[in-house]
Length: 343
Image 1 (tube, rainbow, N blue to C red):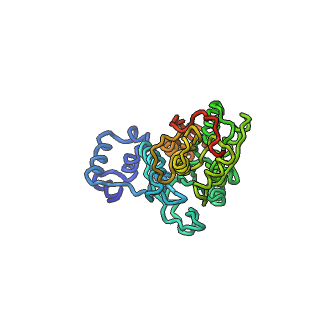
Image 2: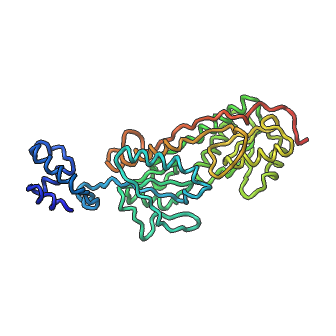
Image 3: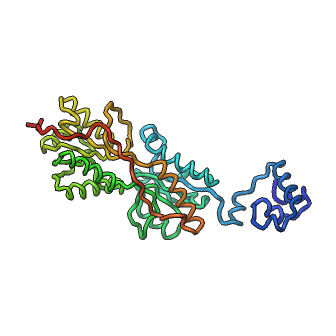
């Protein structure tokens, strides 16, 4: 079924069918109401659906948004973490009357999916939402230079220019927890995690370091990747640390389990603060102090920013946004007891 078929059925021109179908503002003025209703009735009766490719040629937009993830998001180990982002993207797209195209054909190079490969279908969409811990800087630079419009879920460093993004304000959230710990009497703090690499990790470390220095607290940084949690705890306690700030929630769970196994009191002998939501399965009966990432809202606003860029208006706000995190009081941050279990 085509517009020409609808025109023949109703005895009008194809141009009239197009005006009615696309809801043009001048349709009511140029087309008699009974003619318009006759065309609409034929469209309903035949189940006619506009060809999205043809509509794109006419309107320059087909209201399809691409979604690209730099790593798999559906395995059980990461699905719970990414689900709120995807939910926000879906709900916002539905609210705006857009469809989503999940770009899954990207090849994996050096452990990460590449978006701009030879057979990429990015141009089928009006623009793209980019999701993942780390995105390739070269690809971001190419997208900024050649398009199509895109928005990253998560703050990104400049890549030949500012990268449109909606991220979480990790520095402010982390700094707030450091100040809270210092106000309770903690003077020796340790940051556990990568502390660099992806912007989300670097931002946490930046907030931790700035707040610790401003408060005059002693601080140190320990890597956890590839290390046994028991060995990490040995290092922490040997340095007389009273509060640790863990980049990955699961590392906090592992350190807490080791501490309790040794008879240490959490949070009396060692306070533990988790800097975000779990990115991998981590089961514990402890109510970890920390903050929650506004994941659903980040996905929702990323779609808002993208549709603004597609329309050329820039949307109703800035194209780089940092959203506040929600502090979780928890039960693993308390004033130190004053004793040193390592001695």
